[in-house]
Amino acid sequence: MRKAISGVLTAIVTPFTAEGALNLPALRQQVQRQLAAGNGIFCGGTNGEFFVLNEEEKIAVARTCVEEAAGRAPVVAHIGEVSTRETRRLGQQIARLGVDAVSAIYPVVRAL
Image (cartoon, rainbow, N blue to C red):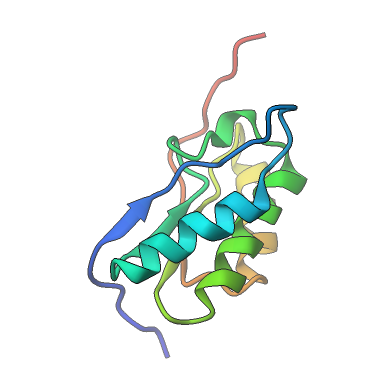
């Protein structure tokens, strides 16, 4: 059965360390702040810098958000990639993490 998603979902940023690595503890804190405010989570979108994350990092962000939300609020993950094939592949991987929904914009062209 599908469940409707309602309420506010905040498009969160993806935090990085000074060295440029994902800062998953800071991401967990960010999710907790949104949950405390009564908001759901939208991760991996433009605010989440999806265009600079590799596949492993995108999965880590979504997994961290799902784990931290622990069913208390919806988590929606962006899965848009440069091709439909890559978008579908990432979407299948992200869906296995237990997100409530995915979103995708049209394929994005990256500068060389």
